[in-house]
Image (tube, rainbow, N blue to C red; front, side, top):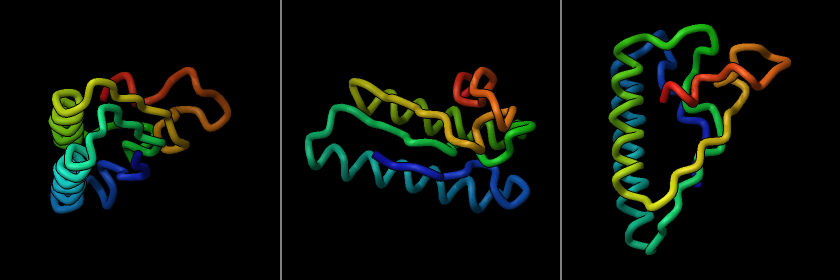
Length: 97
């Protein structure tokens, strides 16, 4: 279980996005050492609710692919930064990740 990596933070900072993917790699390594088969991301995968930068989206896709390859099941629960509308959950960035 992890939360709040905020891909795209700091104006889509390459350093921040690399830090996020490095964290995902570390998380996978530690989870596999413990025999985990399921991953749960508890929200705020992306930072900007209005748009996802193409470079940030590429980091996002690589991280999701790594999680999908490492775990039998991966669950994403949208956080407030993943929701396009503040008062609705219908449109969020998780399906695009």
